Length: 592
Image 1 (cartoon, rainbow, N blue to C red):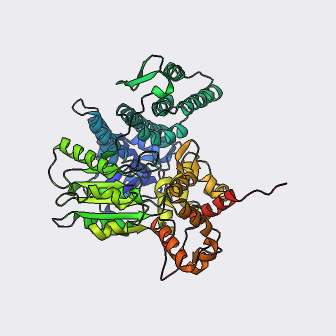
Image 2: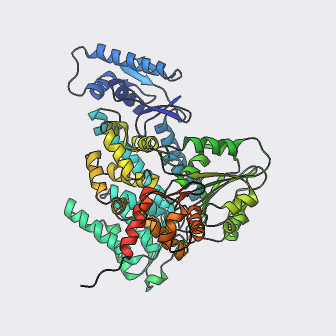
Image 3: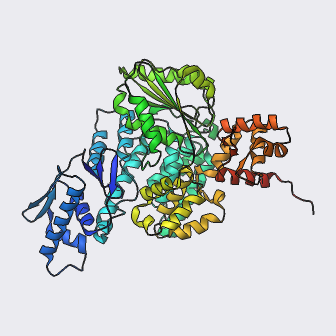
């Protein structure tokens, strides 16, 4: 048994967690865990629980609250972490295995050790950050803790994110850093170091205009909101970009060195992100219980031969998140490591299977690890691309994610297939609970369910909308739903974060298709119903039923449609909206 403090306060039992309801015992537990292994004075506990309106019989009230918390422990089977009454107050004993805050701090401390190289540090820091699971202490009603403790914990996380981005830049993984930096710069606009890292990453990738635009944006914010100029480091970086200087690697303080020269933008170092890395954990993962259970059983069961598991489905449906989550759960069964192999670069360009296989072999050889290894082959475009990487050695395994069905791969190499659909309403609701916190969601349950419906129950859409809501804590869920309803596709995006946009994600996915197949998908969006047969689509596609059936089957294989013969074809609501929008975009305008 253990406790999760880095999110809604929860009691855990292995992978299962129970989020505690807002109550005085919950506030008491939070105060004790924040000072685990130390004595927390009775006066401080009284202030945390009751604030300025403390009961007349304060000592007796605190003892009653402690008794209620002990009963709560008994109810949930917490027996090895007692609440100790000591002179002056109370104490609870915990360690890195029983309290996520201690585990987080221990992992961050270890990562700073001189014996670890940048790659190992990055892995440990990502592992530490994966312990954060949503809105911090969302179910704890204590003004004192939200005033004093929560900001300090949030600052610890931001410092760790800053170190992660520094390491990514130092390792030349600028595209990887961008994914995090777009988000944190918008969530924390006054945190100048994040803006400096974002500008540097853009410039190193050859995106000078975007880097300068970002500098102007933070400069305007600092002047308008704080009345100050950008820091000297930011001003030096702007000057280096204007001159077309080559940036040296970040130093130990997280700052970059500038090697001046008369180099043009085209001469900027465009560092290539490594496409083979350790598999990180997905924070706040929810849903997919059946798929998780089946995949874990297949990957960890007794066997000598290699095993392949394919996760397929529509764009934005959560294939990669599920694969990462399962890979984290089965880490003990793969002593040689779990490697994420990106089968496309940051711009969606597929890489060759031979190149990926050579890089994987080099990484495993360098490690010198023995035993089973697990490869997560992410965003595979076709069977030929992945064949050079299979099979994965004796007893090894591969999780393959793809928008395509890859039936020919399963036919030649065997394995199991998990084709994902959208979340069911309960899974969507649980995701909102996990990310936004029960207090906010349960106060507006109908609005939360409407939000999920407007997102089409698509995991990516839900993640984007919850990110918006987290940065606007005072916004009612009902108001957010009303705003989203105006134009869901256009509004399911994060400003300045190209990778977090449903519209752009679908644009990229459609761009991978044969133009004739892409046109056929757009035409299906004009059909009057979500479900239809080949005969219904034939007239819209301008072909006969047999040819229409072939085209629609190919769209099913590409993840844009579901099911098919003998039943009807179906199109998800969000994809149907997207297809209809493309029809309107392509409709010729009338001459006046």
